[in-house]
Image 1: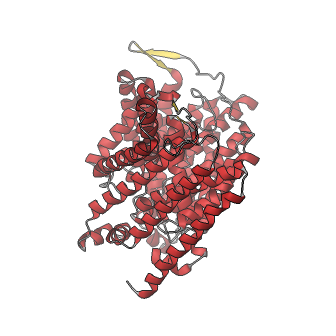
Image 2: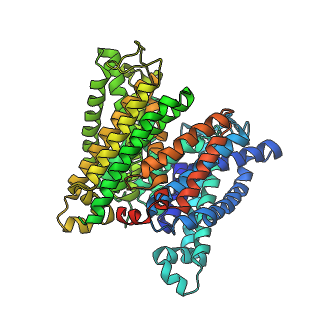
Image 3: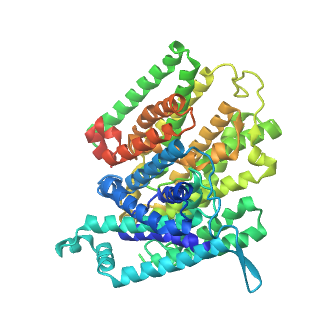
Length: 277
Length: 326
């Protein structure tokens, strides 16, 4: 679970690290990805594991479009810049939720069976549900790929450079908007991947994103905004805290543990664990 | 303070007085209960947004956790009334004081946080409050509290048969919130808050007590929001954690101010007058099907306005005022 939180959060962290914008529609991106997975399954009987790359690709396009249509203008605002970013992405989240309710109805849906659903394996005497295990492996693989991508490719370098000094990269002929749009696409693709995997073991409904979004923000902030590695570490911590809290507190209070740890961490270290700025 | 500014402040006061007087007469002619209900809600959200604006607009500490204070006000009043028979008027005051104290206690660690860390902390704290109330059996847990109706009375602050008293109380609340903002805007605190919002480091170096001025803003803001919450509890007769402390309340409090103009005197009221009737109408005409059309309209509007007019609609009325407010 923690690794999946990490994967959801990495997308958010990437977008934030890139341009200091928090995407408050992140949870809704996840929701869309889960629906996409569901429909691919329901209409074409494509197993979530196979549709994951498709969903990620679709979300990539979606993320880039959202940047070009909305975020590009939000970051340009001169007055109340912080507020404009929060509320334009928040408004988008509300629209997406409304559209989901309109087209998909508020019913709960689930991917009824997949290759992995409901299976467990025993590792050293501990029974682990296979979907979660695969989710964790996908998360690790995606994180590794992202790491290599940022550090080894031209685009990754352009991304890093734009992040450091958007003005200077314009001088060497890099189109800032293009880089940011690709960054948003990449962030959204990571959420798409998480959504596809999570569709195997979570109910899908229009508000599903909201329940994960806050945890994703906490995860990113815990690790420190701007640090992709921090987001991943934050995810693991959140997963562990959640599991521990479940042992002590009633299930309805399990999120309290996560929130409490977040508050403790930022009160002691206002920049998050690995935040640098 | 230059004379032009003094004149405009006097003019604000006169305009407010005239508007309040006009508003007070309207329900005498508009007898439709549905419309009266919308007017009560508009005034209440205007008052709440105005209060939120003190901390988040003037002082620049964006809080998306004000539902906590709203809920505390509602719960204090409801619990005192149903468990101990204490009149809602005292519950209102008690809820306000409790909220102000809690706002300061939370402000102590939170005001060290910057930007998104602060925003997320406010959301998370309100969520913790929500979850605690959800599991607090004595306070009704997830079932909530029903406030027994005991007949029309100003003493008990209950009027099951008419919306008018609620309207006048909401109007009074809106006027108080507006007046407090008007008064603080030109006080030492008002100037400090704007300095803190623009540049905390510079403000600090010029001798502004940044920390205490944030605490002051939080206390005033939380007190007024809690009074609004306790009014709401008496207005709807039933509260549960989700319906008074849910995240949507934090958002709804911020929206009118965002729409009208953050950190401005008139922004929250203007925003509420546009937004609340619109929300209620879309909800009853297209939202009844439960298919989310109201959400689409509502969200689309937020995106459009925040992108097209980041300084809020108030800028359309007086460009000069906008400059002064920034």
